[in-house]
Length: 195
Image (tube, rainbow, N blue to C red; front, side, top):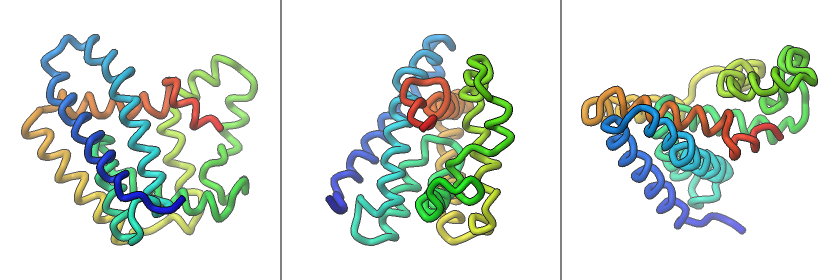
């Protein structure tokens, strides 16, 4: 359908909503904040990941650099600078779709052997799935190194995290982290990653 610049408004709205929640959560009992992180925060983070994906495919703006900036903004509630590295890995995924060696979305052999057909190991694998993404991204030499968008993403993320820490404290960053973790692990929307 082509780029839709109104998507950027959705990015800003979701980042603002998640940030507002991050400032409220530390004042609530830990179990209330945990439930909110699971049901609300993880849903927002999943939506932001979908929007990062759209930015990766240049579906927000016509100019690529505006999409790279937009994906970095969409990634702010994830605490770690994941948007630019996801974008790079996702391009490799499309270049090498289904290739067991070069496609970063295909499970590593050791993952597949360990999980096997055990329901318990599948649940454990889903629980730690965010950690599984790290070694996968390094198995293709084309993903290595730095580029200006990764450096931009890291700088923007560190600045945002410092502001959140200063204004909301560690509790706000913990809420962000737990929401992000749930969004790609044991969450109904996290099932999308299984595919």
